[in-house]
Length: 304
Image (cartoon, rainbow, N blue to C red; front, side):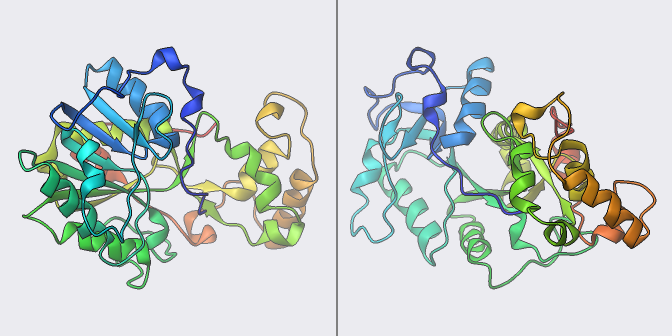
């Protein structure tokens, strides 16, 4: 399921909980620079603090202690990048769709930071792959997908620029509860009937994946990684368990017609139990290689 683009929600942090970057200049060095931190930052920043990793973060508004910055593909000069610090790793949270965008961003940063040779980490989407019963990071992806093309452009810059891509599936955690989506994806029985699988990753595990590639760049560089929590979820299973109560309905009696619709659909389709198999769902992702390569397991391994 394609979720909305990462939104800025830095206000979720109290001002006192953030390091202040307003005094940072381009001569300051950090280990990780987060471009457009938003929702991801609400998980990544606490993890970096916990591990003693120095960092800086940007936002369009410059609020909440972030550096005011926005990427303009059409800018003639890279002056906007001069406010950014030198970094060991540059995390690009916002998506890039335009041809030339990835090269322009990396070139602009490197031109204004000649002493820096960072690993560029682009957060991507598993939506670049066509639906298939089983596929992994090596499987063919849609060659017309604009995000995939921009990511290819980034990876092709090697060895002039070091880069890796983390392809993320459905994002959940914090302000983003999957329980709130049942009513949206299954407003009718027919809509629910058409729903198959969904793959998810918690914000904490997104943050842990970023830290992992930062800590072991030689493993990460010039690779496109597929990152999920290792499970294939069934929308029928989730809708029958959650109903339409949303995040506030957890541990309360079920609401909404979806559980009843699921029972009817199971009878009509001859499904004896949930969740349905990957073959019945028609779409399944295999992200084992990422977790094995970096010797990690998902911390939030099952959606709640």
